[in-house]
Image 1 (cartoon, rainbow, N blue to C red):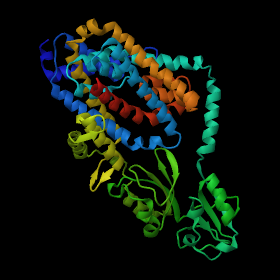
Image 2 (cartoon, rainbow, N blue to C red):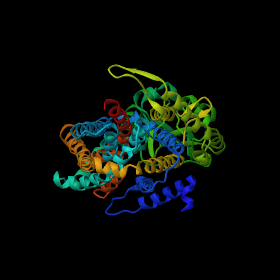
Image 3 (tube, helix red, strand yellow):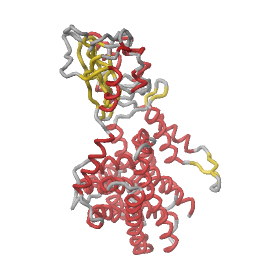
Image 4 (cartoon, rainbow, N blue to C red):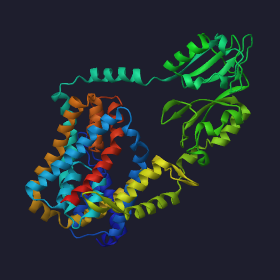
Length: 531
């Protein structure tokens, strides 16, 4: 067909056909975006090729978007119980790395086959991107294609049967985690307290140092004998019998009540003057500033009772740094609230506005970072290369959020689009390139490679399951998230959600995904270097 001789037409046709194939689901199994590589392999087998410039463009777009996505959560994934979850995911990556090296030593695989085996069996497309950049020849993509299928199916089957093997009662596990969360993640609430402590009479709010006792916020004050509440600020003087509305966590409210006075029933209603409004932060100029430095109370005479970030309510503390999309719960007069709204932005369209120049500047910085020589004891002088440099740039810049007047923030929907475009471009090109050698790869390495793929997929899952349950004491449902996140397997996570409708597996998956993703990239580089 003459149209297939046009590179752009061939590229678009492969992507569309692969996308449609990836949407086909059988028993929770689907190829997803990786179906593109299988369509491309067929065209490559019949002699069709795509320009490698498409591959480079796709590679940098894909890896940069991964860095932007993983950056904000990479360091936070090590906090609290995220440390144990991240260790469990790390066990998967390291076990797969060791199994790949052992299989390669036993069967005599070269670095291309070993890298393809590792990334395919652990279903790591970013790892494949790194391997393609580092090694010569086309065996790496062919090995990836051969081992990827069982990598997807193996995770799904393991997730389905592991509960039976371990004889787990899912309902009991759900209740156990729910009780744990109720104890450790108390919701924000409020309490009405009457001022009865004589030591507070006649003192203003800023003189009683509430923040030294607990992170709470006094949002309303009703004087004894009055009918209308007033807005509280640092200069508000407390009097005997004042009724206060205090916002915070339940345990903190109990501590404050012992200090201020006694709990009272009823409601301190807003009058026609005081209003409450939810205002979204969309002004780029205030990103990264602390809440205290904004001086909202002093400048606008308003009170921020709490902040909603990523769907979670958190106390409004002075040292908190402002993020794009934060929702401030503000109390004040209509006129002042309008001014605060202008100051913070509250323009939802800004959350979907893309600064194209900042994206390309980040990618350009990644190219430069990738060429910086690094001296590593025992390994000599190494360079991160294009993939490593672009990944580091994405991680660092997304964590910074803003540098001077440049905003590195990329809306999640936009970042997903960049990632998908880059991934499809990359897979289409390497597929056509590998298609010309896939038959010879199967003839030369076929059965040993398939056996190795099964080993490299199942061995890490088994080892990590033992470590998670016996050593790290991770609950079963969170373990499912660790296993699927450690394998960066979205189909595996889909299978886990059929076992329990709770979000515990998904939350664990999101926690460990950045660790596993970056770990696989580093291990892929190490495989090529060692072999």
